[in-house]
Length: 345
Ligand code: RAM
Image (cartoon, rainbow, N blue to C red; front, side, top):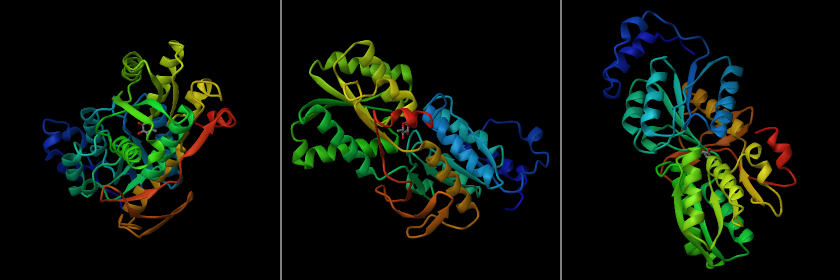
């Protein structure tokens, strides 16, 4: 990996419209050299989210094991504005590549396009940026596979009929949009779900308080509600807390962290079972991918093969028209394994 001089990047960065008004170039451009081994940044969706922290941990470990330097730049909250600031901050640290879990699949595009124009490679992980803003996306599992696991859980736990609601995170996050769209599609096209009614998709923006408020409203507004399905770890915990506080009989499934959900799980408990994948591994996959892109081992094109310590991957076409690398399949957690996994993530 070539050394890069930060002042070059700073000059480029100072021309970006989104960075207009930053006046620190004189103090920062003094021949600061970037370490051998490359410098790679991870911009998660937000701070205060244990899932994101685990992803960041996995990213950092993988970069450091390869002799590189990892920068984790947390947006203060899961919003576009906070994420733009987090991107700005890593550019000023002269990185070789950036891996982003996007809060909004299109609103970051102009900024990311300019980052790419400056020679910094970009991939996304967890929640994609649009295809023209990335070389490749690292997806946790296939969209249909996740949606089907969730719909089948709702079908099973409700006994096959009745009202359910989805408590999602951000309305413009690509992962949430894809999963919820595919759940709707399954509802409409597969007759086995025909006695289920999706009454509302609510958005808690991966903010605990907002997610709790949304869960409370769902319980209030739909007295016949049988289940909440939350395809977000923040929404899962918030829903579990609300259902428990209100001693409601509403059941819960979704994508939850074992460490956060273990007290709410069990055959007759609020959440009989749920799904997730290893967030450490997802962050590590993002790291190996951005390093392979920066080292010109891959370009992100469909059909390319890619190996790292976690296994062999083939880049494939994604439903959004770009390309992706899929980590694996969603894993089921229930009373038999949740305590063991809670020690890991
Ligand atoms: C969250 C985030 C993330 C999602 C997981 C399941 O904390 O919203 O994007 O993939 O949950």
